[in-house]
Length: 131
Length: 81
Image 1: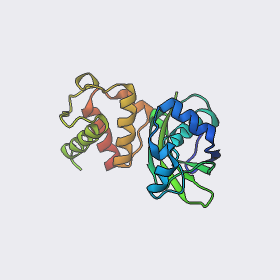
Image 2: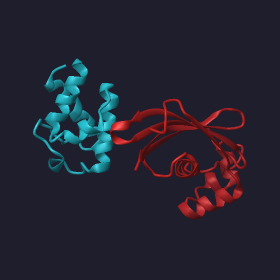
Image 3: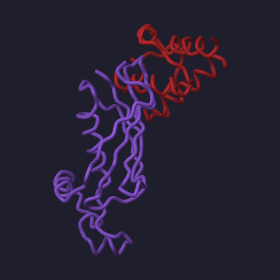
């Protein structure tokens, strides 16, 4: 098995305007919280709130592109959103191997996205299969 | 832990993983008897079972199971060893 318990992988992401624009194009989610600054501020946020599911796209990138092997598929992933993400936030992503299920060639990761203040903005688990 | 207790707990795992509370498992149940018990679901069931009972199966053990009863016997052996 190529993975060991506690193996840790790190990546960094910036939620830039282009990411925001492309995610809206993909998802068609134009909720005013994500697209209307005045509306977002009226709800107590300091600016436009980035779509939480942009982070799921980063998870897809992590699994598909950043692991030491390419023969993987995602079986499941969950995410808890803890704090908002705003334009140009730099997110540090850390994923740690939390479970190895050799009988079915499956690996579980526990992951965190943290902003530049080290505050957790999202966390969850990903289960992948090695095919 | 008795066979019946393990069967009930495995049944709960099936309910959760397959989102189907109507599934009733017996020791004779096979994958053909349960809707949506496909190869991907099988992996999720095995992982959930390993986590729940805090045991590890081998791929040989899994491949040898012909029905739920054989899966439960395998769990029993591991819990009592």
